[in-house]
Amino acid sequence: MSDFEVIALGVGDSFSERYHPTSLLLRKDGFSLAIDCPDMYRAVLRDASEKCGERLDLFAIDDVLITHVHGDHMNGLEGVAFFKHFAQKKRLKLIASPEVREVIWDGRLRASMGMLYDGKRLEEKTFDEYFDYQPLPWRQRTHVGPFEIETYATKHHVPTSALLVRAAGATFGYSADTAFDPALIEFLSPADLIVHETNYGPAHTPYEQLAALPAELRTRMRLVHYSDLFDLSNLAVEALREGERLVL
Image (cartoon, rainbow, N blue to C red; front, side):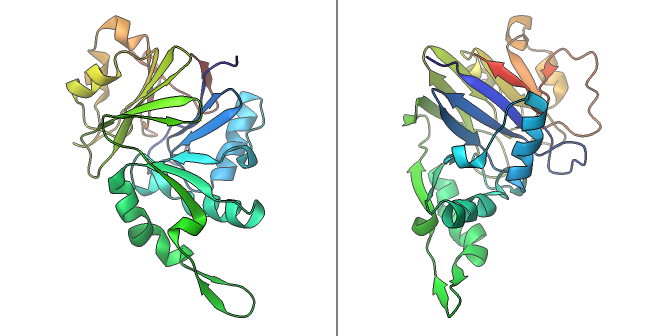
């Protein structure tokens, strides 16, 4: 049985010029689940491949979970769905909360994907022609490939899904974007590995509050979504680096 792996594709925020926007790849038993989908996703995969020493290929990623609809977490979805549609002649499996599903097509993607020219005429396209949607319900468990996923609604500008992902006795926790929330920390605390965001502003988590958590919890935690100005030295919570692969 293969290991449960977490690969950091990007670790930065929306404004970074040093890092790719935060996104992850979960792998188990030959199955890959993308967590969020920043712009130029194939380039993100290529750069992570060079750093981790293993080729990461979009042909092998058919399932994408979108935590929320901010651009740094989903702007690559159009390109990935077009790639699947044109290059692979298949739909992309899209996993997201009902709130994300409600707005992601009409509010974000329809304007650029809702019409295709076939060489002779324009043809209207629908969400279901590009995507195979799987709901990600709140505080219920759902299965995607080998993974069992439970969600928690974070404190953020828009509906955002934090995650507990279980497979073969191991558990991974991801905060997604969030203000500091003790109840979320409690939700994530059973995980063997916790990836938690840190950044500035009321809808993000100050590093100092994570650094004040109990030492045993901090040893299982890694930071993402940090800014270019974030000092990576002498941290009480270790920062995740792009291309880093962690095995649970």
